[in-house]
Image (tube, rainbow, N blue to C red):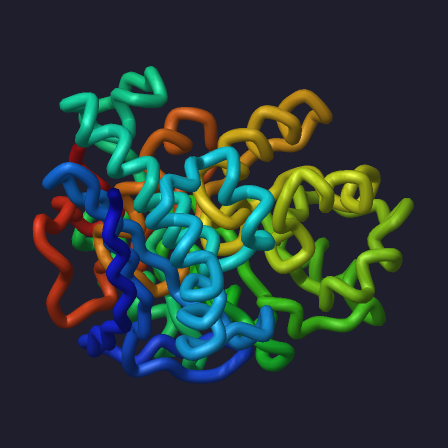
Length: 321
């Protein structure tokens, strides 16, 4: 017989996290523990209001399948019992962790993946004045970050990006607009980014306006984030995006994330691996995907004033494995 424990945690940030959608000062997560025969598997998710999620709604979703989980529902069953999203992610990752621990392995070993000694991760430059963002980018570069993810809203695009590129002329830059742009003027903005040698633009338009990207000629790759959740999303993305951002909180766990990665590659999409504001527990669950992606954006725990234990080891721009 299994036992299930579900609880919430709030992790203060050391610096406000400012994006087009608002400002965050803490990471609120839900943790799932599934214990069987004295062995405990743990999973974590970050409910995201953009997808209609809250701490309360996610905990209620998990509670709705509590009896089935305690009666032995497995990874395959949970894909049917819960929809994609944060709740299923926490449960799915807890089940993966439980199976790995029962086998005396890590989740990475259970998937058969061999990880490198370290993974380059993007470090995020949050929204501020052009000078603030340029100074932040330069500080991250000086500490060793080589891949910078620049958050933008709909204002001061040229001023911010020109200042950042001048501050870090050799950095690899990716830009995330978090759905804040409009189709009008998008071509000019894409050309500006290409001229500044930006490597990729992430989710410039609201997901509901993806049709504007159909047959849209653009000089740099565009990545789907809010527009891509599971394999079901892919049929709407062909001809509009070149890359997808896989996040376990969107796919509903590692099970669907692995399947999405394989199907997306088959269809010709490049891959990015992202995260929400989270602890090392959530990043550890995503590690099997790191070997498949062009860009890893796993700096969520680096924004926390303190991390969960055992914490992964992060340098600025590097995750050491």
